[in-house]
Structure formats: C-alpha cells, structure tokens
Image (tube, rainbow, N blue to C red; front, side):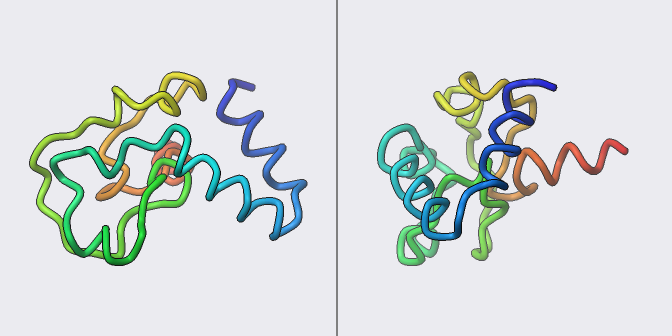
Amino acid sequence: MDKFEEVLEKMSEMSEEQLNTLIDMQKKRICICKDCPTYNQCMAENKEGLFCFLGKSSCDADLIQCKCGECPAHTNFQMKYESYCMEGSEEEQRSKEN
C-alpha cells in the first residue's frame, strides 16, 4: 500500500464533517490548482480545486499547461497521474488501470 492508498483509507474512516474540514484545509494549505494556467473562471466561480482527490472539474476546460506534478500533494501522497481537472482524481485514474 502506497502513501496515497493509506490516505484514502484514513479518509474513509472520517465523518462527513471531518472530511469536509480536511478538504477545505488542504485546498488552502497545499492546493496549487488556482495557480495553474488551465484553471479558468468557471472553476474559480465554483470554488473548485484539489482535483487530485475530488475528481475532474464540472467546467469545460482546455488543457493549457498542467502543473499537477509541481503540487505538494502530488509528491507528498506519491501520486502518479496528472491533468486531474480533466481526467479525474488519482483514485479514478488508478481504477482505469485495472
């Protein structure tokens, strides 16, 4: 089990309130989605981010440049995919492998 899988397991044990608090905290602390050239006005208006955990954006977007690999979450949680805002969360992309 890698670091990402460990984090998912811990998150599954949290209450909805704890999970929402954690997500809000991580959006503020480590998320760099808002600094990515692909992040657009629609995403900002919907207060989207942390796509690596939450899944792809509800907005239409054109991939301008991907900064997922530069994100602290990407490194800290041993993620291996990118383009989360368009392709889905790390978990979703891993599930496509199987």
